[in-house]
Amino acid sequence: MALSTCKAEYRAQTQASKEAIWLRQLLQNLIPLEQTPYATIIYCDNQGAIALAKDPKYHSRTKYIGVEQHWIREKIQNEEIELQYIETKKQVADGLTKPLPKDAFVLFRSALGLE
Image (tube, rainbow, N blue to C red; front, top):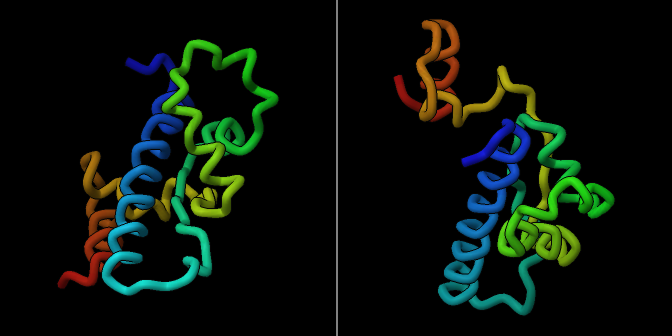
């Protein structure tokens, strides 16, 4: 259980990155390329979690986080994953995780291409 939203987002972006790497490998098996030409972008609305993943200077505060959670740093350095900040208002995934007011739901629905 995470004690802060930063830790929870850090764990979530690590899990999303694991799924993205798996999908990249699947695509590579289906359509062989010498090298995937670009990083997979993971959007996150928590700047603290992004900073934690990109910069090991926060290590003293995160000693208790397991090694598998810091795996994302390696993927960022290898340019397989890129973390980008997105405003909470523009975070489409929120429609799947929390109740939204009608105007936000309409934006969520249109972002999915549904009418």
